[in-house]
Image 1 (cartoon, rainbow, N blue to C red):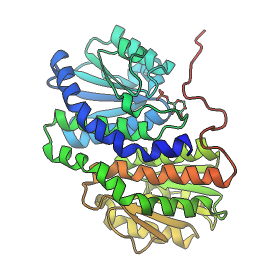
Image 2: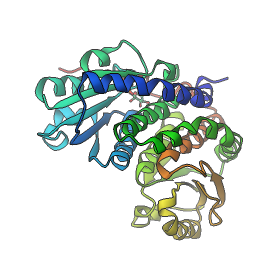
Image 3: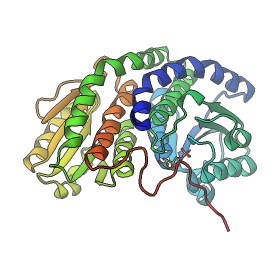
Length: 348
Ligand code: F1P
């Protein structure tokens, strides 16, 4: 079995491990760093970890009511005037699967040495890396580490970790209970998700793929395109579903596959978008908590979860679609072109 496929299937085990591991670790961090009133949360990462940051910032704001932003790690030290709040009690989450990406380490160093009002928390899947040494505290999720270059279970497990942390900060037990149901929900949906991803992944019809999502789902839509780019180098883009009609829709034709990550909040607006996409010839896949009558394919996931707690359940379809598309093109998903698992920056 390919490494990537095995890691996609291992997600419920990693999620269960995170649900047990994170609460006591966070309690220790909150006590030792004296985390009390937070005025802003800053999430940062590179590549897939940036998309975790985007979804996590949206989740954090919804769960805690405190403002949060997501930025590429490089912008923290190269454009701090526009990315780092100048005052207040700021919590900065530095996200990096490897814990060794140069920009992540440079950002952590920069914040620690120049911004005393910012507390840095590393989120990584490898223990004992430079990340732990450079941040004020670090959550190490060794059970979600990966052999693959392409990030799958590390994405969802680090995002889940950040949603758990936000729920703990807000003392939101209902959200924690919702999150605790995710591992079983993954198992319930897997057969349908795998079947549809396999059929569409192997289809020779599509020459471009668009992912649409809003709110926390926008980061997930970006991540869906990154999986396809990494594993298949095929044309793909991500947008907010309502924004997509304001211009980009002109790229749609009969060879376009469009995946909509839908939530209950936008339900009243989305049927019209689906109709328009189909009118222009796209094959529309709706992934969400209710069956869609307007789409060509409808995948029901997390029907009983809240919009926010359901987020992670959208990813397995995107991961498997990229996996099967790679196989259909004769590519090895475990060996993506031009990529290694860590980017090291040589600074002169
Ligand atoms: C993650 C990342 C991946 C990408 C590539 C290089 O870095 O940018 O998103 O797929 O393999 O590394 P990190 O999370 O380890 O910092």
